[in-house]
Image (tube, rainbow, N blue to C red; front, side, top):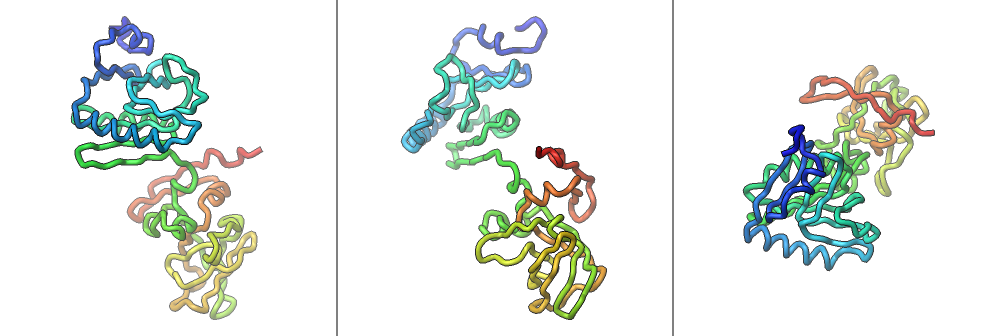
Length: 277
């Protein structure tokens, strides 16, 4: 045991090679027994497939291989995919492209929660969980931007359902110049002028009036065509718009208001706002 009670990578390196898997998370030692046959069968099958499918600039390697992330964090995934430019050192020195864990009874909870958190914080782009008992493969990808919210582009390409789209813009009808037109107090400075995708017209979807078309934006206002919409909104009514592109909309605002089950739940400051130089 280390004198301080907190394990470090140096302490791990001093342990004997006894066939057990020793890993480290925030100074806490994790010890796993030798894997059972179903684990190894699943590991071998996936290793063959990954190796045959990997691009020429990537190398697919099985455990045991130490992947350190800090002085008190080091894991040993079942499979690690690295760039071929990775130095041939005793341990991985760069960031893996992909890590894979094969689930077993003794490691399932740790692989699905604790290790996922470590890989996520380290910035590992892809983390796969192979369950040989089902069998099934869970693919987790670290993605920023649109994936966090979903937007009208995601709805149009089928990757996000309307009910799962988290980013909404609440805007007020400030004018009804004619029976078939409405003006919103949200323009390009709120919704951006980004298009959705080919064949999808307008600058956002109005959830309460799905047949209305947000056809034009000035800087401060949105122009809505109501010719196909019945009923239609009144002056002063607040409506909900799903914007075309979540990234640009987020960058235009200082805060995001949070809502859970229809009730306010606080706010988040947009930390990257104004950081472009």
